[in-house]
Structure formats: C-alpha cells, structure tokens
Image (cartoon, rainbow, N blue to C red; front, side, top):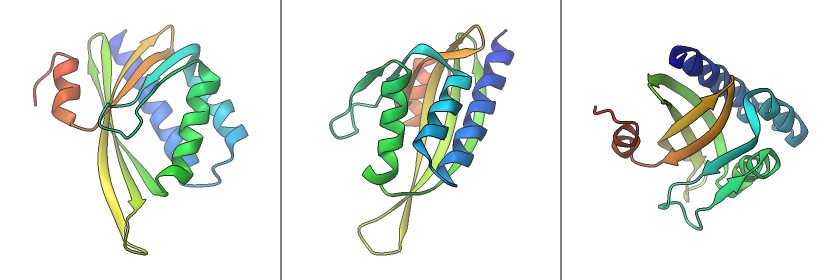
Amino acid sequence: MSQENAEVVRSWLDTWVVWFNSQRDPDQLARLASDYMAPDVTYEEDPVWPDAGTYHGLTAVVRRFAEYVDLVHIERVEAGEAIDAGDLVIAKVRIAMLGADEGEAIEFLWTYTLRVANGRITHFRAWYDPKQALEAAGLRE
C-alpha cells in the first residue's frame, strides 16, 4: 500500500507543478486539490517560515497555496522525487522565487512529509531542512 501512496503523491506533485508553472487559476487549484486531498486535510508550514501556520480543511489549504504565488513571487516549481517511507511519503520540490535583486531567481528545496489514506492526502508538513524531514519519517540520508 505504501508504494501506492507514493504514486498518489507523485501524481499530486506533477499536477500542482503544472498549475504553479502555468495559469495559476485559484478555481482550478481547488479542483486539483479535491482530486488528491481529503476534505479534512491538514497542512503544516515549517516553523522557520515567517508567521508559519497550520491549515485545516481543503479550502484553507488551497487558499494558502494560492497565496504563495504572490507572497513569495514564485517564478517556477519543479517536482523532485517521491519516496515511500512506510507510513509517510517524502516529497521534494524545488521552488524558484524572485529575489531582492530584480530579475534574479533564488532557488529553494522544500521537502514534505505526507500521510495518505484511502488514496487521498490527509496530512502534510513542509520542511526547510531535508534532513529533518527524513528524520521525521524515520530515515537517514
């Protein structure tokens, strides 16, 4: 079952990357989210993120991801690997944002731990430090 969970996450990543790199229509994001996430999904931001929060429910999670576009001036997103880690799936995402200097993009690698049940993402957490994400999933680099 855990490999199936990794496939769900892989498909979600691929779909969301297309959304972030194209039209970025919030209504489309809500439809995509409902394809992959449970209605009562929870998303936790890493505490290193300024004003980090926890978002409960599909609507709150979608709203937060739509906010990221303008909040951090996302230029492009690339999906990395989705790793089966037993009870969790680890996903890596490379995000390019506009920096303080005009036109210069800064890249960050965010890692997520995700819990999937019945083919839907029920909980996910962002990690700025990939090592912490691996440790949370009981893995080492």
